[in-house]
Image (cartoon, rainbow, N blue to C red; front, side, top):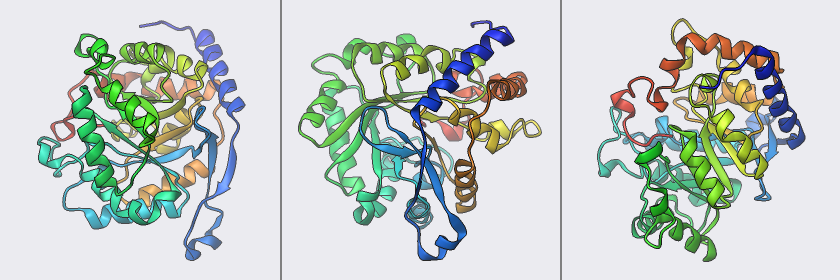
Length: 346
């Protein structure tokens, strides 16, 4: 682990914040039902999504939590519709996502999230930038996922198709991904045929193999785990974020509240601190799973009112989580991954 003095870390953060300010932010009015219009100004600041030419709100929907739950179609559809009503224009899902309330074990659960999102996409597809993923590393398997994803999402084109959950070190055969039998060939073919528009990768366990991938191929986007505990072990902010910024990739942050663990131990930090920390980095957007509409509305208010933190404010938040970082960085293997979250969850 890299050891920083306060001064060197402060300077590092200042450079990142300067990069964030260069991205610019323009608040835009989201599409809203008439009953919401007087409330406000429900605006989500927008940032450029790398070199894709798209702009996305700094706060977006990660279609897990309620949206991926079997038997909760009505609630899931309500959440997705409400997201769009309140101005969210980026939705992230996966061919993997599906839970029965206790676990994600079993192929019969796969695609539940996509199917729920698809119920909304059949009438509102043009209102969002739609992202999904394949967790299969083979050409044939990825192509099967693409076929099912298009069907589940009720669309004929996906905006962003990603290789899901790049794994640590020797657990990932990167050469195979690049081979004639590997999934990257499927991604490129789908892009050439205009079935998908952009290509990306995702991961939360280890930044090193992800950096190797983005160094070897010009992916359009990267989805990585970014929260206030990150610096305390195998840091994405140190090891991968600067490269993604240099390559002008669309950058998506996840694990913002670390599956709500960031609020345990007496409430380490608030959701406002958690979101503001990551949104102060040079990222395009953050994705968060939603259980209830009230959570969604609270998070959107935080995004609406967001002002970049100073380096000292970010340092203070990093220090707050330091005593609990092993608990918070479970997705990097520092503590047990709860059984109910098994699988390649984002």
